[in-house]
Amino acid sequence: MKDPVISIRHLDHYFGHGRLRKQVLFDIHLDITAGEIVLMTGPSGSGKTTLLTLVGGLRAAQNGSLKILGQELTGAKEKELVQARRHNGYIFQAHNLHRSLTALQNVKMGLEVTGTRSPQEMVEQATTILNQVGLGDHIHYYPDDLSGGQKQRVAIARALVSHPAIVLADEPTAALDSKSGRDVVNLMQTLAKEQGCTILLVTHDNRILDVADRIVHMEDGRLETNTLTAEAPPKAA
Ligand SMILES: Nc1ncnc2c1ncn2[C@@H]1O[C@H](COP(=O)(O)OP(=O)(O)OP(=O)(O)O)[C@@H](O)[C@H]1O
Image 1 (cartoon, protein in one colour):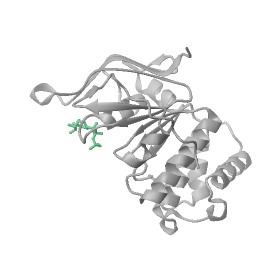
Image 2 (cartoon, rainbow, N blue to C red):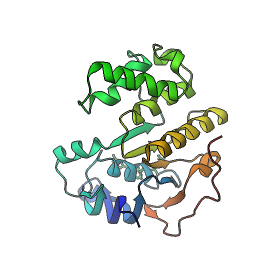
Image 3 (cartoon, helix red, strand yellow):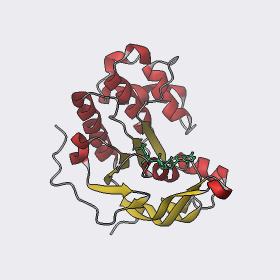
Image 4 (cartoon, rainbow, N blue to C red):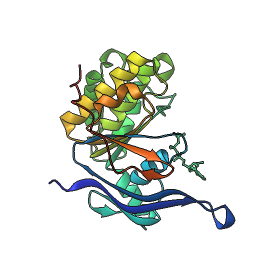
């Protein structure tokens, strides 16, 4: 079996201090291997986003073990967390595009953090991936002039342009109608399979569950161990 890209053991998480201290994650175990698409479902407040932000190095893990590409993030210093974030692409419900930047400039930002490419290469790679997500004729549009689905496709392009090992997505279809939501996840699936990247995606959207290789369920801060495998996921249309 392949080494897991994400390996979690006995992970707990607490918010607050003193009398206000509250446990929100309890003894989480999870292994995700390279190229797997894992969807996480569960009621509001069950801890899904908290787990996603810990995996993404956006907050520090406190108790237990959380290894990303073999690197232990529990007890990691801020500098190490910043380093770990470089392996990740992030896609959120509210796309988080910069309104004052065009689609091309937004996607280019996904490459600037790596600091390894010339400006010319960045423009070429950003243009290529915008073509791949079907926005080749919109590269100079500002977010306000794009539809919700188009904005989310720009966000996908930005997350994937640097070929991250891991893509973390929090409710990427929540603000979209059924057809746009479908298009967006199909696109994520196609690009991720092409690049061999691992996806951990939080969703309430039952319409997209079939893109998963595996579905895990969070309930009251506990990850259910009897995970479901999506039945014969159809390949992207
Ligand atoms: N920064 C924070 N400080 C204190 N408590 C928090 C913080 N963030 C989340 N919580 C609490 O932790 C619990 C889990 O929240 P979390 O956002 O992870 O749930 P969720 O499953 O992602 O919910 P939703 O589906 O509504 O986004 C909730 O009780 C929430 O109120």
